[in-house]
Length: 231
Image 1: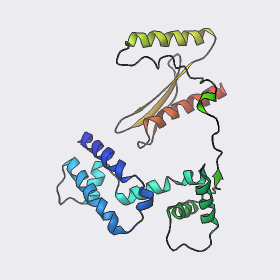
Image 2: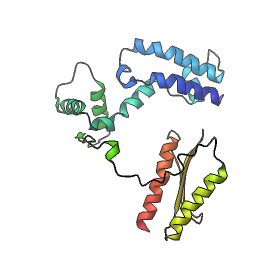
Image 3: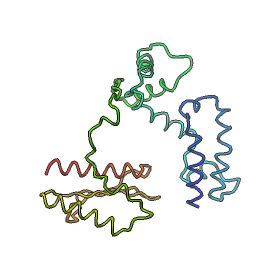
Image 4: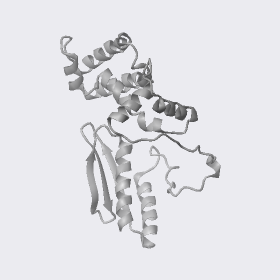
């Protein structure tokens, strides 16, 4: 069942989410056109009866309602609106903040500003600088990329281990203290861990289950940076 639910989530929500913060606030009759096939797909994915309440079906499948999804994706735009590189969008946000009269039609920008005021977020729109550097003029990366040319399908694990040991032995021989990080995600949990080269744990923990594996990896790296900065 979990596999079918994941397929339903990836196929349906990816299409529904596209521009949802914009068209999601249109007439309720238009939203109903999306709700019927969405609810039917979720019902089939868990094998529920047609008479089962929609709220129960969505809770059992762990899927959000369309209304909840609209609000979530709309409010996720707040940091993007207040810190953006698009000058036109930046000016529109400034106009919406300075506008005294209530607009006849509430735009997505107005909704985000109103919600940030309810949360008492003291945010000021900031126009970020455009990146002017071309990729071929950037400095060399500090990441070790020597194993990127070795595909997993044709490379033995022993070769990976040998290259890894050669790299770590070089830095240990130059009095480096190594830290190792890892992040993992399953259906129930999203976790991260940071340990020393001796295997002693520095920081381990859970993060919100809706976070991705990339967030877990970033959390582990952040914990390692914090530990290195004070030691």
